[in-house]
Length: 500
Ligand SMILES: [Mg+2]
Image 1 (cartoon, rainbow, N blue to C red):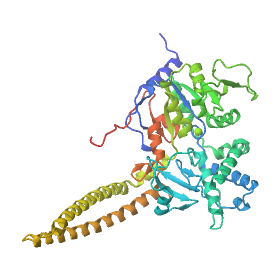
Image 2 (image 1 turned 120 degrees about the vertical axis):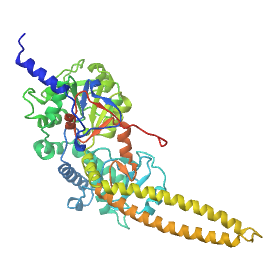
Image 3 (image 1 turned 180 degrees about the vertical axis):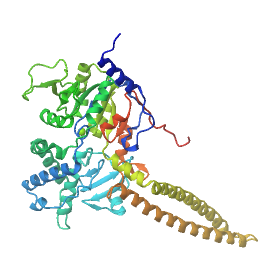
Image 4 (image 1 turned 90 degrees about the vertical axis):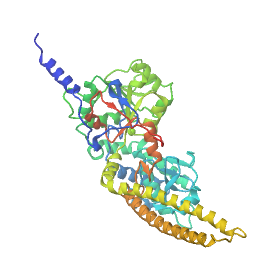
């Protein structure tokens, strides 16, 4: 039998796919695993668009968003100086909480204790922090606290803190809740009225990264027999513009960006998409109008809007646990998908690149911090032990009529204990000093104001805890999937209890 060229190509491709990639990819191209996941058991891979397939150039986006917000705030009656102020776009990180009552921005650890707090861009001292939050866990009451879940929302914090700095004087009474709501309304309006999207779509190369590996990554998944879908909250026209830009000049086999996907859902209103079960899809025609007939089938090459998870599962015929969904929003994409469906999740965390760079640079310092912590624990144990012994000895010496031939010996022992305690206290002070200094410099290397986004000192931050709890996998960009075979078995870390 004579094989045709296309058969040879097909066989070569299959042979390619069958060869396992040896060893681990370099740390920055790696996909990290919290919970075991076998890619060969995944039949369908879905993608969010903004900050997932489309990585935005953060500095340009922040500038655009801040300018539009400042203009709208001034139109609402805020001072004109907002238009000419300097905004520190490197100030916020993801996972912060805005305290709308006190006008502070907080970083909490996995147990929701406040570990760092800023009022405007001034850091609160530990006394101020203790006074404001009384060492209690922060209850996630949305009337008081607002969580910064996505990179889109960073500019909300930048503007809020800059305006707090500008308006807060000893004589003024700022309504922080009102101010934060105004900032959010203005940013939302700028996104909703199309003014920002118009600027972005008119110069996409300025605002969106073009990654030449994206088309081959999607192709690799398709070649391994996986169905792909897009599920984005962005409107159809904006999705069309951005996806066209991302996949332009991709692979000749794909005449349009739409041919990479089996199903395309826009204006999905996540997290509502995962929580409602009564919304049907609508088909968007090429002129932007909606098709009046009810959608009974999700067809390739068409663009749909709206819908909900229940309808999606019915029409796609895909059981939940064979779907992998890739998104960047801890609440809208990852947490809701995990809680409401059986979908597996891969979270895109762009910050990971900086975190890994800092970790690489600071290996020696981080090891030294760990060593100092162990030393401190040992010294404190020694101190407590000697204090208990001293107390017991003192009690014997204080007993009425306790004078005996051993008194002198006991007094000498008491003196030795006191000297020992003094020596340990001096050592503890020195170790604490070195530890505090080293830890602060390690934190500054991660981020000048907040330290690592995923850690809070030796604990996980609340953001890090959510990533660990809800994301099966995480990485800094979709194209890292290129590093793995389509049947790769991602294995999570073996959890150990304290006694193991
Ligand atoms: Mg997104």
